[in-house]
Amino acid sequence: MQTHPVLGEAMGWVFQIAGSSSQILIDAGRLANFAHDPDPCIAMAGQVGSQVKMRVGAVWLVANIRSMTLDRRDPGTIIADIDFLGEGDEERLTGKIYRFRRGVTRYPTPNTEIFPVSSADMRQIYAADDRAHVQIGTVYPTKDTRAALYVDALLGKHFALLGSTGTGKSTSAALILHRICDQSPQGHIVMVDPHGEYAASFRNNGAIHDATNLALPYWLMNFEEHCEVFVTSEGAEKTQDRDILAKCLLAARARNRLAEGMARLTVDSPIPYLLSDLTTILSNEMGKLDKGTGTLPYMRLKSKIDEIKADPRYSFMFSGMLVADSMQAFLTKIFRLPAEGKPISIIDVSAMPSDITSVVVSVLARLVFDYAIWARDEPQRPILLVCEEAHRYIPATTTGSGQAVRKILERIAKEGRKYGVSLGLITQRPSDLAEGVLSQCGTIISMRLNNDRDRAFVSAAMPEGSRGFVESIPALRNRECIICGEGVSIPIRVALDNLEEHRRPASNDLSFGDLWQQIGNEPDILERTITRWRNQGR
Image 1: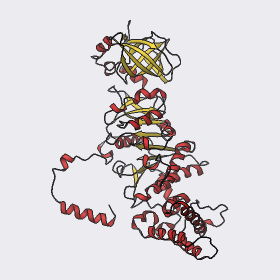
Image 2: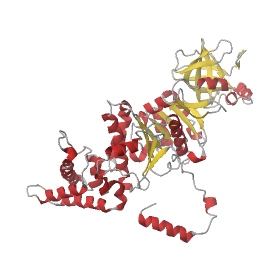
Image 3: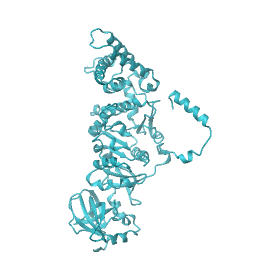
Image 4: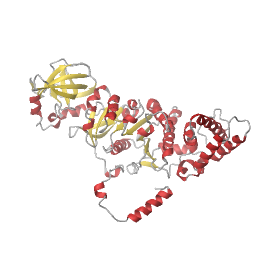
């Protein structure tokens, strides 16, 4: 094997070429020499997840090592599977790589020499180009090569952030969103926060909405969302109840003066109506003699509406104060139009009753999508919708409650980018997501996944050349991730930056060892907790 005057000694040669996946032979003795090199990239040469380069004409090809096996016939040789990542031009005098791009024009021939990739090469390979980007961490295993996410490609084609509990998922989500907010202080981001973690993180550069100040008008719900809240029956009775609700809801909407002169008033039109009008119309219909049904469906609907009106937990949505036409003010508040330097809306749904949370998320997601559709002829204001715990809202099951939110989020995943709606999904259970949603995400940011089934789903959704990176997902440390897809030039493993203390979400794991050493004030703690519990207030 030759020694190149600029590049040093080769580590092996190409053995077999087969499109995206090929094989190389590595000299085990040379690897031992590299292990003590001061450059961390060269010291890691030949390991699974590391990169190698080879020259074809005036171009350097770069490949990722996916798996390694000892050659049984020659114990001094290692057989490695590689995936090609891309190619860069060769600088004449130094032999360095520059102008790196994804994809391969010409494949090498067997016996082409293989060289380790140095830190200087990594800087060139991962150097951000002129597109708008945010820096989120350091490319593994280098100490100073910055990892860039291209904002337009990341948001334009949707993204997913995946990782088991405790891997630093919430902090990583906050880091990425903070970087985007810092770059675009006039942006429009809506984030659904099911655990109340992110209010602490975005208090200074975001608007925080929860059950106390959201004031979501009930009349913004479409017919399907009304059915999820008001219709409690099953089977044939459910169809009957839905038909009655549709007729009475349309009549209630028609009573508003905004409905006068509207050529196409439907049950889905966001026209304000009074809940008392709806129950009055139900009572009137129940009293008519020409109906073909008994009074039971009317009684069921009326009692459910009365129950929700009287329940203080639902007052953020079903208060009698929310009947005014506040649609413009509500959209201004939620979509940050204008942003006024606070581009993100955190919708904290943790204190809302669990049986209505999916309807709230459905209404918010549909408002984002419907706004984008009806504003097509206006100056563009793209909106990013981020769903934490996405597997709750886009479940794999197509039966049971919560189907309205599943349908709208699936529709945004498929069609949103045509209208300027971007979707960011954050989940610890990608295998529980509806089929096909993950593959709609152009960029996948995967932290450690401990479950085999989850890893198989992620592997299936990743582009062909990234499969080698999937193998290293179980070995990732906390706050490390694999990023592949549209948002990066080529797949990368990143050690994420530390987020400033005041920008971190309130998601730290409790220390049982420390907290179980502490005693005192238990009666006061219980008294205050029981008071909040009984008042249903936090």
